[in-house]
Length: 429
Image 1 (cartoon, rainbow, N blue to C red):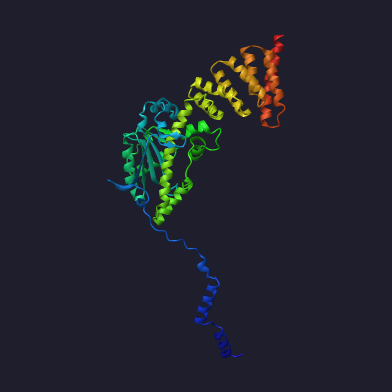
Image 2 (cartoon, rainbow, N blue to C red):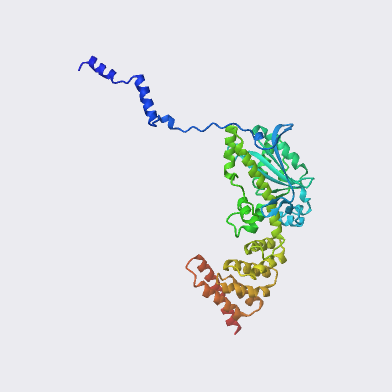
């Protein structure tokens, strides 16, 4: 076949442009599209400013503008199982116990300011608090929430200026994990902005540590949402924003200018502040009733330990005894018996601890009570046969345990005690 004929055949095999257009039309009618048309294109969202979504205002400062949202609540507003005013009804002396700071017992409770922030997360440039919320009881007796939102990160200086002005007359802060999160972040932002940073010097009643002391025995977590559901009776709306999504939502807002998700974040922050108010009331209410049978036994054990650390021994004893006098599970009974026995021993009331140690020994969980009884009868009652009897009982129990370090160590100590007591008894004969 010559080259000319080959070229004619090749050329005639190429479809014309009209043929290609007709082919595309047929394929489109059949639902077949080109590869690039498979790529989904996000719908174009309208740019909705935060001013159009929530009833706030733009505040002008010496550092520029900042968007502020203010909400007012009557003091008898119910939030979950508590009223906001329950915070005001507590004994200020209890705040010293809760906050472990005598300053709170002397402070005007109305001058304590609740603080909560939302941030961009810990990125390369550090966390930026793009939303700061505070709550306090104002001069009219209402609970006032102020929130400052950064429509643009450039408004941060103005936001810090408004925050510092609000905190100027504060007697202290109330936060939830604020000692480790909110206050350090805001302090660093003030330093970077070359503004005074008084937050770290204000007394900080951080509600997370007392919440853990009270409720960690019966709750799988002491996150604020868990406390709301299990302790405070607060039900968040389905439209609420999960906290872990908030940094990415703000980044999305900066990219698109659509503030609809930011309105939800503002509401999330508002609920956080309201929940802190009633959480503070719940902690104080529980601290007032160490032996109240309406409190779960686990909570009263948490209270007892708290009181022991505060050297409030009568309250500690009352809490433990209230649990012992109830029908509770084996582990809870063990902790109450052991806690009370340890308290009485530390107070030099060993003779009162003896029946508690006997009850502990009957539970057959460990040999600690056997050892305490052996020591008591050896050194305080000088009854060597009885001391030896309790040592033998401890050995009999430990020898039933599975092989392991615990068994080896316990038996080694008890064998040593038994031999020493036998030697003493032999010397007495």
